[in-house]
Length: 312
Image 1 (cartoon, rainbow, N blue to C red):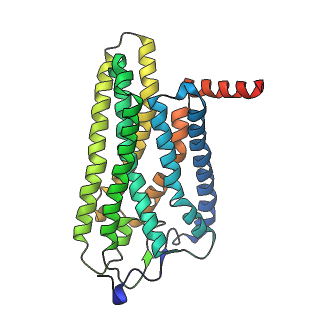
Image 2: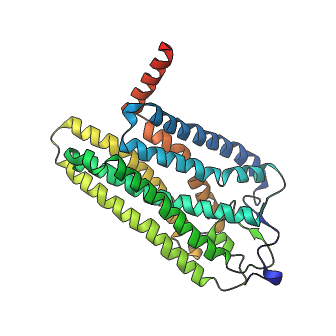
Image 3: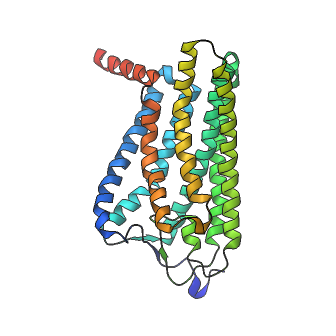
């Protein structure tokens, strides 16, 4: 399928990105660089603090560290390439680089869908089954849940990205996006891509709608448990532990649904680029702020860490 003039294994792809707005490229470079640095600093802060402070060695912060590491990998899989393309005239990416980028973007995005389900189950167990929480969320089970999240993401990506690159491409290699993603690559094909589009819709539904339904079910149970609470302190603790996660879930799934679960004619390509930009750049930088803002556990861990350094 990949021989002759239509072979996609030779030459580079051109990532058109935001070249339709050349006057915006410098401003976009600055804004994206700032958000990328915020993502690096914020997520590394959560990972290091969760590792150093023994009080944060809990299932919640174990999964949060996984989410932070995932966000670091996800942004790094596409943002450095975008910054290079925005800064200079060259906007190319090699065929191999495009395959690798597509694989990791799909893998990490799928992993995040599953990991957010795991985190919602952790919050469900903490609020609805507090007396059994230590047994339900024992360290071995937490590690199994984390491994299952990563394995499911990378397995799904291996199947789906292979299926995408089996499609023969046309003569031009201009990808109308700022990174290699499935819909943009399928537009280059000189063959019928209905099977690929159907596969994308099915897998997106499985790894987006199913996790969303499970998360909503968890939070419905949490809401019922919270409404039965008589203690004001209990209410505040429940909202504090679940509110941040619910904000992250809302941001993540709304944007993913806008990107992958709309029909191709339902949105313009330019609109899709800016939605993907927000999802890729802004959301990972906001996650650390959402989880740490007004978080007493994190503030306490910072004070203990600063106090230990002063004693030394």
